[in-house]
Every structure is written in C-alpha cells, then in structure tokens.
Amino acid sequence: MIKLNFEKYKDKVKACWIGKNIGGTIGTPYEGCREYLSVEGFSTPKGTVLANDDLDLQLVWLNAVEKLGMKGINSTSLGEFWLSFIGPYWNEYGIGKANMKAGILPPLSGDYHNEWKHSNGAWIRTEIWACLQPGRPDVALEYAVEDAQVDHGSGEGTYAAAFVATMQSCAFVFDDIRTCIDIALAKIPESCRVAITIRKVIECYENKMDRREARDTVLNMNSDIGDGWFEAPSNVGYTVLGLLYGEGDFKKSILYAVNCGDDTDCTGATVGATLGILYGTNGLPKDWVEYIGDKIESIAIMTGMGAVSYPKTCTELTERVVAIAPQTVNCRLDWTFSNVGSIAYKNAYVLVRFTDGEDEIPANMKESYISFVRGKEVMDKLRPNTINVEMLLAKAYVTMVDGIDITPNGELRVKIEFEHNRDVFGIITNRLSLRWWLPDGFTVSGKNFVCLPTWRSAHSAVTTEEYVIKAGEKVDAVNDVVIEVKFDGRVYRGYIHIPLMG
Image (cartoon, rainbow, N blue to C red; front, side):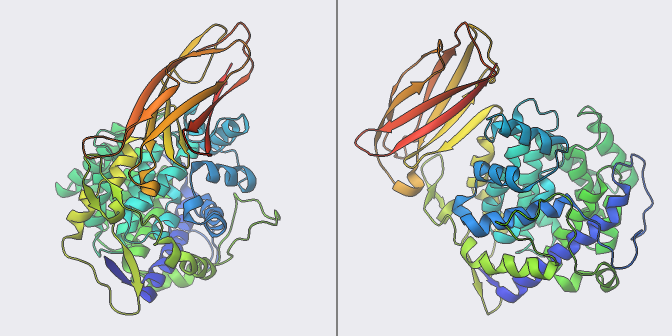
C-alpha cells in the first residue's frame, strides 16, 4: 500500500493545472510551426490565459466522473459526453463524433475511416485520469485508453495516451522524471511507434546529442505518418525531449519542448502539467505563475446545457478533483488475476490511501509498477476494428476481421472472445446462448451455444468463436446486427451491437 499526504497531493494537483496553463499559453501562438523555434517565454500580455482544448475536454470528463463515478466511465459513456458537450469537429474529434452519430460505437468510432487516429488529441487530455488515480498508473492507463479509443481507436494516439497517463500518475510517487518515463515505457508495446520514438529520444539524451539534432532525428523517423506533422509519436517524443534535456528545470523543459515546433501547445502544456505534478507548486517559477494567473479559458466545450458546470479557475478545478479523489482511488478494489492464473497484486495495481502524515512509499516501487500486468493486458486487447462489450456476467471482445463495410451478397468474418467477468462474480461456469437479430436477407454461420469454462490456473476463462455474416441482395447505408446473449439459468440478457456500413 502507498500512503500519500493529502495536502501534498492537493498541491501537486493544483501545480498540474497551473503548469498546464503555462505551457499551453506559451506554446499556442506557435502551433503548427514547422521550423525549429527560439521561443524564450510568454508572447501574451500578463494575466492572459489562452484557451486550449487540451484542458477543456478534461473539464467535461470531470463532470462525467462526478455524475457517473469511476465505475461508469468507459469509452461508450465518454462518447455520449462527447456528443452532448464538446462542440468542435477538428480532425479526429470530428471523425469520432461523425462515426458515433452514424451509429458506430467506441472504440470502433476511433478506427473507422480515421486518418487522424495517430494524431495528438488524446495524450493531451490525460491529466484528469492521473490526478484521480495518483500512484495507480495501471488504472490511469486503463481510463486513458477508454478515453482515447473514442476518437483514436487502436491508433498511435491511444498508445500515446497510455504512456502519458502512466507517466503522470507515477509523478505523484517519484521525484525524478526518468523513473516515471521508464515505467510508462514498459506499459506500451515495444513495437508501437510511440515507444520506438521515446527510446530514440532517450538514446539521443544519453549520448549527449544536441537537442536540435535530437529533434530532427525524431522528425525524420516519423515523416511517413501523415505528412510528418501533428502526429503523436513525434510530439510525445518532443515532450520527452523537453523533460529529459530540461533536467528538472521547469522553464527550460517547456521551452525545449515548444522550440521543437509542431503541436507546440500540446507539448508545452504536457511538460508543464507533468512537472507540476512532479514538483508541486514550489517547483513552479514564481514569476511565470504570477504572470499567468489562475483563470481557465475555454474554447471547445458547450455551455448553457444545464447538466454540467465547468470550473473557472485552476483553484476551483483543483478543489473539485480532490473532493472526489478519496472515492476514485478506491475504485476497482476487486481481486484481479493475471493471464497465467497467479494473483499479480491486489487489483493488479497498488492500493493508495490518503493520510495526514508523511508519504509512505514501499521500497522497489519502480520494479513493482513495471511488473504489474493489468496495464499490459489492456494494451494487448487494443486491436483494430474491435467492439468491446462489458455485460454483467461476461465481457465480449468482438473483432471485425474484415472491417465493417459490407456490400450486397458480401461476407464479413467476425471473431468474438467471451471472457468471464471474474472481477465481479469470481470463479463461475457459464453457458451462453446467442440469438442474432439480422437485417432482412442477411445470414450468419457459426456456433450459437458457447461454453465458458470455469476459471482455473489451467484455463484462461476465455472462449473464442468465429462467425461469418453474409449480406443479402439489399444493403442499406447502416445495417444493424444485434446479438442477444442469454446466460443459462440467469435472468440477465446481454446485447452486442455491430453496425455494418453499406
């Protein structure tokens, strides 16, 4: 168990938001600049805070957690908050929203015809998950992935969000950024471009490469993604560059990241927020804190909707976050098992409690964090063209092997993994009966009676079945397939919705 002094935690949360505002305001005027820059500080008048969607979206997520609790937060519920309270249709935001409006639920909404899924919209909004899960990096990762999948699906943008959320959650426990980076890097797949880029930045830093040369190295290695700009691997790389080359100096770290160019509001804001968590308000330069002030300016959220309220200052935002934190750090306290059948750790994470006393951090926490399996399991399930459904007694992971576009008389392969919801109901045996509701003329082949084995160390508690959906002569624009899942001997029914696009 980790014990965190509550007032120290609160101070770190406030420093996070102030640091976010500082870095975002310094970086925003240069957003999209492709050349290497020479920014030396603010270009705005004193007291001016530039609006930034990086923070805006997190104000909506705060309302979501306040209303639904952490247990109610997933990509589907966040998708509804997207459609209700977030206005812009920029890039991946617009694609995710348009897909959802067409009936494509998350995480599929972030994958379907989304050329922006490798972009920056998700890793820039992770602080809320870190602040609500301090010292619980695997939990912060899990919620950041649920968030990111809405508009980034299985893209690099989601891997980037997992990395940054993990790093920031660790910053509540450790006092050196390199440890936080190492733990976060261990949680994402080695082969993803975000991980490859971060390792290259670390290599450049350790080899004492000039930071401009390091920046050019990152830029060139990712030039094949889009047109090489506004993509997550490079911009997370610039963020890590600022954190490493800045060597703990708040001002240098932000400026080094911003001067790499590209998505400068995102890199500057994330560096500022991360170092704010790491060092607290005493680690923020007093002249910059006085210059920026406490205000929050919004640009991307819809007001006047009645159901939600948004903080107007960093102080108010801090108060609302820490008010619910004692409950959020208690979420998911069930026993969670690794795939090989051993108890990895209580909740496969660490337990955190707030205290009036000193912080109590067990020895070897870096190694313990790296060994926890839950975050890796979450990343392993991150696949293209998937639909994840959590039913009461089981979970279903639906992979649309051939995508969801269908033509008259066309066929699509579907793979469904059914997994016990053992986190809630423990070791149980289930028999599942499937009933398919298909559009006129459509047919499906495959097994409709599914045996879900009793979980034991020799079993994975997962059953995989494969199906083929065949269209009829007529295909509509949207063709809804619904699978009713009946659990034998139980009243409950689960439902899986698969939209097929004609």
